[in-house]
Structures are given as C-alpha cells and as structure tokens.
Length: 353
Image (cartoon, rainbow, N blue to C red; front, side):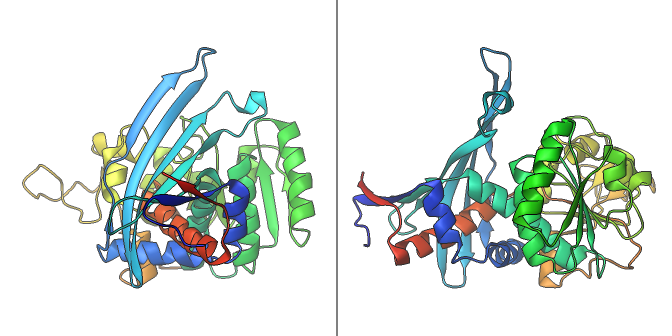
C-alpha cells in the first residue's frame, strides 16, 4: 500500500528488522561514504541536550539531520537518539529513538521508524567497511571491549562480512556480562571461537581488529597494546589514549567538521589542544602555516579510502586507527533503503497525519 500526502508509514523495530533482510547495510554505508566524499550529502550540526536524571544518571538526547543524493533518488531525514546510562540497571536498552524520513518534494513526513537498531547496524557497518578497506589482509582475530548491544551487532555483522574472522576475544568490566555475551555469541555464530579476556589489555594485544564499544570518557588503550598490522575501529571515541593516535601509522576519520567541532571526544580535545590537524595539514587560523613535526595530521577520510582517492594502509604491519565520529547521513541512507523495502513488502502501519 502506498501512502498519500496526508499519511506516513510507521515501522516498529520488528518491521525494521524484517525490511533490513532485503537491504545490504554495508553496501549502503559504503555508498553513502563515497557520496560524502563527492559532496553529495548535507550534514548540518547536530543538537545535543545532556541532563541528569532524578536518580543521578547521565542522560542525553541527540537530534541529527542529514540528506543524501543517491544516484537513484534523494533521501532526507532526522535521527533522534536518546540514552540513559541508568537504563542498564533497569533492564532497559541504553539507547532508543526514531528516524523520520521526509518526502523530498513536499517536505512532509514519509516514514517514521525505530532508530536504535539502524543506529547500531550502521555503526557496525562502518567497522565492516573499515575492515574491508583498511584491515590487514587475512585478519582473523577481533578484540571487542564492552559487551552490550553494539558489541553483539558488530560480532554478527562482521562474522557475516569478514570471511577470515575466526576468533573473537571479549572483555567487559562486569565479568558476568562478558560470560553471558560469550555464551550468546557462541550460540549465534558457532563457527567463531569466542573467549573472555582477563583484561582490556589481553583483549587488545594480538588482535588484528580492535573494536571498543563502551561508554567510557577517559582513555585506557595505549599505542604499545596495538600489535603490528592492527586496525582500531574507535566507534565509541574515548577509549584510546592520545599516544595511540599520535603514533599510529594511518589516522582515518569520517568527517573533519564533526570531529573538530566536538569538545567532548578525544580527537576534538586533541584538536583544541593544538595536537591534531585536518587532512590538509594546514594550521587553521594561523595564516596557512605548516604545523610542527610533533603535531599529528589526519591522513584521510574513510570515504576517500572507499572511493580510491586515498590508498589506505601502506604496509601489512601498519597500525591503523579509524575514528568514525558517526554521521547522520548514514542513518538516513540506511533508513531510506529500509523504507523502500517496507513499501515494497507493505510492512508497518500507514497512519494519518
């Protein structure tokens, strides 16, 4: 059933999951990264609202608009994702929200869908794209730090998209949670060998792919933990120590404006401290001068690597850090393909405005 201008399609989480069975999320994310490099996206600043719950938990609301000019159409929308660190103790997911898609012609609502599943999936898809384009050939071992929903999404997607992956080490500050994760992961992906590491260090050392998926605000992973050839997909953004960024062989981001405009996360703090420069290497606000040799420059965006504008990894022994801040255009791109699949299969409910 198609919708009229006075109707929109509402998709629950189950509807989104069903529609995604017809969508190659990794391919959609790779395409959106390429289009970002080609400047065929719009990525305004996000709105960030933090507060403390009456019980003292750290809460926040993010509103992230974006638009993508696909070869076969235009997608525009807004993702809102809300989170409370107190939800884990309540037995609730940490994050939840909605993604709203608009009709590009009239700007009227086209679809409204559960956002958390797409948000987790596109984050894992960025790691999958990074593993394919920046990972060491034949990489087979992954270290996952943090054993929540995002970690499981990574494990399942990478098991399906990185053929050489065979061993997964996991660590969580809650040993019982790590053991429950190991049991569930082993049941879901029995071809993988999943083990619980005794420490974060043990999880990282010797891993070809390191994926921190935590809520920490202070770094703990130094450069010395990273083995030759390791790729770090730093999707939770604060787990690395500055020396891991300064002394990696290749530093890749998704969007410089997002990274440099943020004052809470590691790379944004390094930029404000004069320790990090954009891919151009130009000292901003300094008459275009060259930086000192001690300042780290971003080497490329992931979109440039995907599109072939940057060669990526230089040697099998290079340590690569991919610090993807998280772009709303990826949520909009995946949600757009989900809405198309839902319309074809008549999933969800058609509601009146």
